[in-house]
Image 1 (cartoon, rainbow, N blue to C red):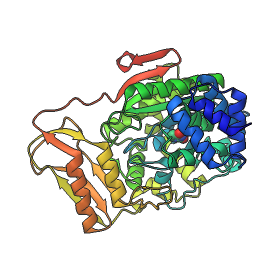
Image 2 (image 1 turned 90 degrees about the vertical axis):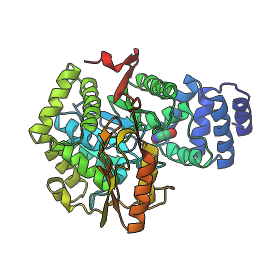
Image 3 (image 1 turned 30 degrees about the horizontal axis):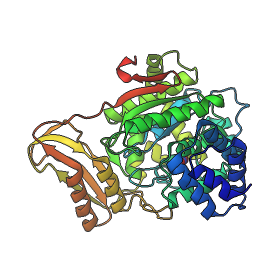
Image 4 (image 1 turned 60 degrees about the vertical axis):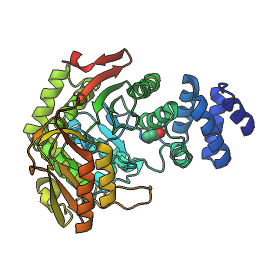
Length: 445
Ligand code: URA
């Protein structure tokens, strides 16, 4: 393999043979191709993209660069959920225990927050003692025992993706649909899933703000899953405002526990239930979406879902007492309300401004090495379309210092725009994408 010739062909818009992609990726993972050559190749891909057979070869090479979480011996459906990332999105914390309590095995491999979006691992780690760095063996034993493990990408699984992703991050080559699709699906296939539900965020706070790109990403992942016996279903959900009220790691865990106990904000419940109904359909546990919704409600009202969450927290070394008593989770000492500056209608609660506000409070990161403060954030109780009176409480800032609380309030002032008339908000769930095509969501029943 002569790497400059491969770079040159990709640079000139020619397709590479699957075997060439495979060798390049495996040699890179083994340390035999330097970063500068791989970076040049990635930039050529950024401009020229990859066709289906190149994308499949990339995914297969990344899978084969490491070990798998082999759960194929389990007589249970194995379904995960993946979100393209949002603000206030704590659906994974709810779905994992609900699904496991309904007989769906959930090997859930999640990421950390980066950019303006939060990450499931950071949220879980706000529970004292909770360990997300499980080995594959530990994760396998836990799924066998209690039906669920919530972990980060281990050192053993898809090491080529880990190395490539870090290089993409450092060379402005992340936003390429075939690279994203192969990266995410390599991890999902390595979890030996029998199905995957994708939460594709749309709107100003989403990773790819153009809906057509989100749909193309979902379709690329559906195509890759189909080749591996892992059917993928995607729902397009709104990220033109935060999901739920809480934004910040501990606050989000508290809100997720509230939902598992039968409470919580209506938008968060609706999106979670729609994603969960798809997981139950894919796992053949429900015969219809309606039946899936009923099963989820029953899992919550019977207490089985919250009991499963307690079991997961305990199994992963966390202080399980917080599940019954979330006040044990410490919050930052300063708590300041934000009031409506005028009469009117809430036009936007801009998720990017809120996400950046959480980072400024210390609750997120600007580089992978940053420490996060789990105890800070916002609880924003207004939604676009709400009519408000001047002086009405719209949000609470949780901060370490008075100065941070003031900065947080300024961020809220930018994020929450109040005008004379409502603007059009996105539907909470707008489209469903499967191998059969894209359907608008009002067709769902
Ligand atoms: N998340 C991933 O795991 N990989 C990507 O390439 C982008 C987001």
